[in-house]
Image (cartoon, rainbow, N blue to C red):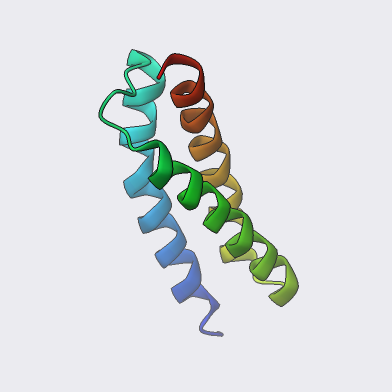
Length: 83
């Protein structure tokens, strides 16, 4: 068994921690308390983490960053649309 399972556990925990806030924001469409600058930088960072995961061929990094990137991009889109 390789240490890759550590990556899967880390990916599930960090992505899982982000999901409830993302779901709440998507349901309520309330983005007033969200910093636009933070979400732009966060989403860009996720793009780079995803690219790095692809470069390494690390499935835990790829999967977790795809899920988190989709959710962050949706929230960023709501922030840009609704303020």
